[in-house]
Length: 278
Image (cartoon, rainbow, N blue to C red; front, top):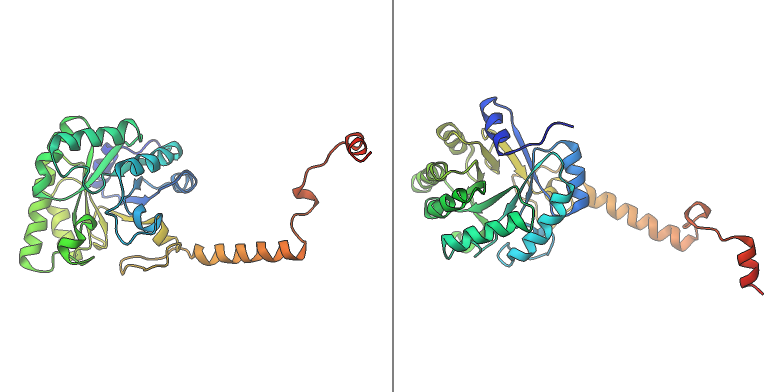
């Protein structure tokens, strides 16, 4: 197995022009599989509010929930860097509260870095968190926690004003000390400009091929979440179909008396059985 991937590895990958792979993980079993497959970073995303909890947004996810899932993922990750999302309202009211909550994700959840949404308006907060020796990944473009401000999940950066705002956000995040910036749902030409402007790596999700790396929700790319499939998702597997087939076969074998078989059961000593049958 390759050596541990760290925040320094992100910068080295950009300098060497090697793409960075990131996938979300929310539990031990999946995190262990993704880590052993060689993914560079595991993101414990607040997207769990949708793909794990079944909500229509990420807004209801709490800090305690993020800590719970972070613990499971960090137990499994041996190589990958574990980045944990700061959920809605865990960093919005004050920089001091943001630092405390980021610290909880590190101390209680085992996070090796945190991610938060927002640009210029959160630069001072990010600066304070970094000053506390907590690595921060930024997130700009379409920021899901702001969906009501955007009027839904919509592509950002298509107008001159929006594009310039995202560029300004990226510059502010770099100046504030982030080690990487996630770009979500922005045109690939804009992602190319930002990737060339900033010195820190950019990680794209629905942001085209010019970023320094890519991130996807694992449940999406594995074909496990069927409520909706975003335009930017490629399904590299269709596990929901495989799981349904396995469950159907399981039910059929139970009903037919074909499971369990002898090899799936335990035996008891004959003298114990004879004693019980007296």
